[in-house]
Amino acid sequence: MKKGLAIIAIAAFMVALPFIFKPKSESAAWDGDDPVLVVITPHNEAIRQEFAAAFSEWHERRFGSPVRIDWRVIGGTTEIMRFLVSEYIGSLQGWCERQGRDFPSKAASAMLSPSLPASDPAVQDIWLDFRTNDSPAVASSRIDVFFGGGTYDHGKAAEQGLTVEPWPAGSIPAGIVADADGNELIPAELSGDVWRTSHFYGTVLSTFGICSNPDRLKDIGATAAPATWYDLARPEFFGQVGVTDPTKSGSVAKAFEMIVQQVMADSMESAGFDAAAVSANESAITAEPALASPGGTLGQYQRAVEDAWARGVNLVRLIGANARYFTDSAGKVPIDVGMGAIATGIAIDFFGRFQAEYTRTPDGVPHLQYVTPRGGSCVSADPMSLLRGAPHRELALRFFEFVLSPEGQALWNARPGTLGGTRRYALRRLPIRRDFYPSSIPEFAATFATYSTIMSDNLADPDVNPYELARSFTYRPRWSARHFGIQRDLVRAICIDSGDELRAAWKAVIAHGGPESNPEAMALICSLPTKPVPLNWRSAVSEYRSIPRLVYIREWTAEMRRNYREAERLARGGARIAATAR
Image (tube, rainbow, N blue to C red; front, side, top):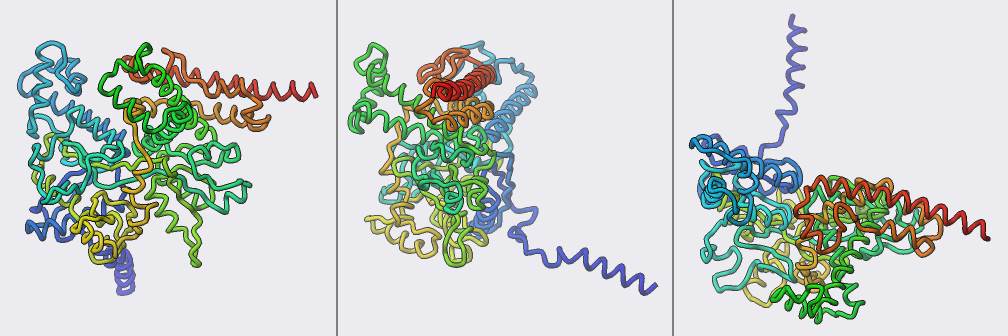
């Protein structure tokens, strides 16, 4: 009996071991009476843990109680946007029904319109109820903050009425976007890229670049490491490029837009329009759009813009032709490059820098190199927004204040274990506040001197400092901003859904003399869809707005598959004829 009890006791002890030695929970001080903030985010677990713990401690010091963040993690920004839209539609419909009011079938789409819809009065009343009300009782996702993702999705959320202004105009507390003397801490935009609006506030910065594995490059006989976007389309990298699906990641979709933008800038210069001429013409067209019409004074310039956009899309396509895969996770590419599974890939800067550090050998040699192409990437912000009908609005504003404070900003790049740093993880991201970088403003310089001692990266390095990197790139919103959404769908159709046929065609071209020897095949590979209507720079934002998304994706994919199969046939047939002639 005693032996049996001893065995049971030992077994119980073994079961209890994980709980006995489990690290103390970072939210152990929180209890059921303390506040809860609900946050939806695409950020990874490391970011979630560090910000949850630091915000709770900050809140306890400032307001006397810890906070638990209830994270809602459902995927990338695309999934988040779909979820929020469905939640708000369902919430408003439920409120209308409780009021004894009808919710017409058109109301669901009309309430997301940026302006009062021209429809029946009942639908207009619903739009007004939604847009003029911030009460959780009327319309709410039951979530307080949308934290992370790209400016495109946060801008779209504001346009659809899903988010509201955290502070009325002119009432932003000092120290958030400017200091008490009016010195700007967070610019509204830099080099054409928006960092904050009245509805969203950038919290951290990102650039986009290329990661590569030196050992793997040697194995495949690469002539040089890729350093520009054009390099990723070199035939020697066939099957060696890792790419993330832009329809799953807003950040990577932005990287693809940067590729298009750089090709457009280079093409415009080749067409005789230098940066000064481009700036002057874009300003003139912004003031008077008719100048860019086919018969307008700047019609020739506009034709160059449209041709340049098609060239940019085709560079993206050829990178896709070299792709080993399109993954759902932006973090997978640098991991695979570091392991040598692939030679190179497109990476967000912080993933690339983190993996370079992680793969460093004891003698200091990294198995991964990361480079941001000079002039090939904007500096983009990951924002946060206050959701309409936030159940814990006051607490959400405190979270805004913390994340944008020096204490919150330090978490993005501080070394773990340092005073003011993270607890466990090195996030290796770039703070957005100007005073974390060298400055001639004494107060900013003092903040930089204080925090630079605990940063993981040298934020004074021009190849790291986002304020310096932004000087080498000018984002032209008119060129591709309105095309952002449809470009994601276009990449899906021409590179992913028809990917097998694209790679087979490109492989055949490479094997039979290369692009120069196969002009007909290359013309088919680089063709843009002609159905449902011919796709070009203009139709992408005009005709295609009225065509259902699933319809045009289906048509595009089918046409591209046919074209790629024919391109493969031409490449192989052309080679046989040439061989016979010899």
